[in-house]
Amino acid sequence: MGDPTLESRVVSAVTGRDMDEAGLNGIGERVFNLVRAIHLREVHKGESV
Image (cartoon, rainbow, N blue to C red; front, side):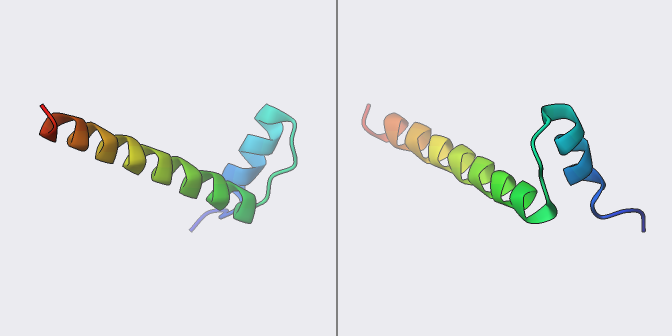
């Protein structure tokens, strides 16, 4: 339902950079991995105390 390219077109309009679905998915993957790494780092900080 709806337009699956809507989010990438919104990002392109806001940032002024050409963005397709694959590029947007790549950004999402990087954000997910960074958040995961931060959570893992915080868990390991608590274990060393």
